[in-house]
Length: 299
Ligand SMILES: [Zn+2]
Image (cartoon, rainbow, N blue to C red; front, side, top):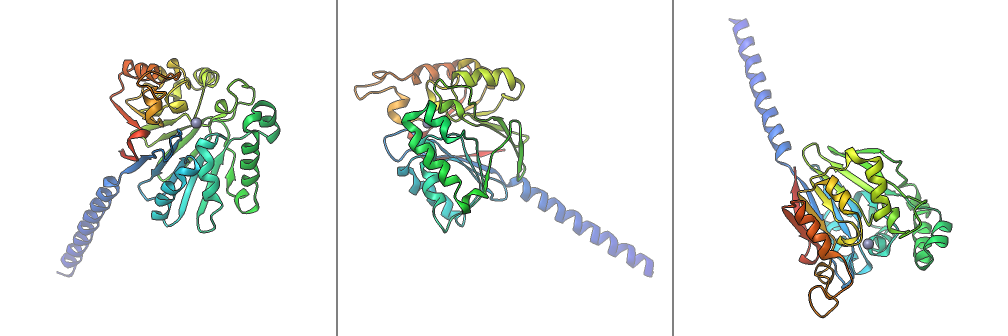
């Protein structure tokens, strides 16, 4: 009789454990990763993305201009003023000015900053017009309290963030001195195992060729960030290899329509051409910066 009771208790405990594990599994799976494309808060193009992982880790990529800082800060405040990972694709102000302002705030905690920059002298020599801002950025990253958070990733380095594998497919390319700043863009692939996102920054023609040569088998991604705000960035050949279903366009209204102020296609920009490429490649969804902040769920 005693033994029967014991067996019954064991069965009951096992049943309860089984039910609990099913509930935990379902909760875990119902949590989704959220990807937000930030919108421009001035007339100038910018780029900024936020990824919230299943367990609320906050990843930021770039962030935009000074005019965009307040909007980005709203998201950071909601995350208790904590950013777990911040990736800076390259040195240009339309990508990293908001970062430079937020990094100086004493109440904001940034745990990891991933950046791939050349020495100050390189920018002085090859990108004179922007050398002052580059120098300011490099000095900021070298400040005592920030320095310890800064990491320079190596090519093909993998970083595991709460179930997302982040792989660095491209780092600075100091040998490319045409279109110099943009061509130093870090290229980052986020892979959840079910869906992937490719961040290109402002990658240009030469680094597109380099990526096709060295990383061809890793380029295919479900979602792609359109390089250089959707025009004069990565090549058609590169996008063909990526073969995305969803395009993220860090593109303002005037740039989207190549509008100088006198109507569609009145400007010198190549956005309409790039839009056509993506149509030809069978992209089914476009999300555009001009339409406001947009959050999509990632599997
Ligand atoms: Zn840019």
